[in-house]
Length: 61
Image (cartoon, rainbow, N blue to C red; front, side):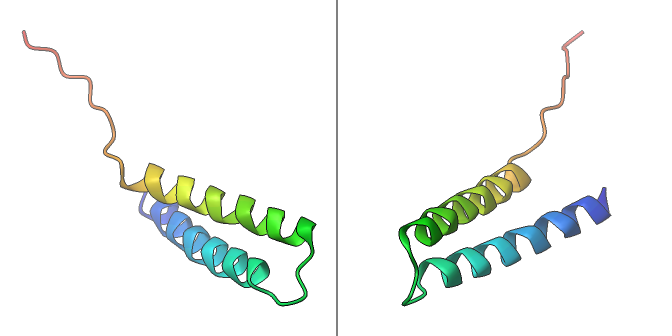
């Protein structure tokens, strides 16, 4: 589980850096900016899913 969290953190950092670099490139085409937007959104989804607490099914007996 600890390894999975580390992989998620690395994916977030790499996704955000690459997405922002690709989108802010001076010679970026429309396809490049669209791809950058998708990469940044996916990195944000991974970050949000990582920081939301897991549900624990506890029943009051």
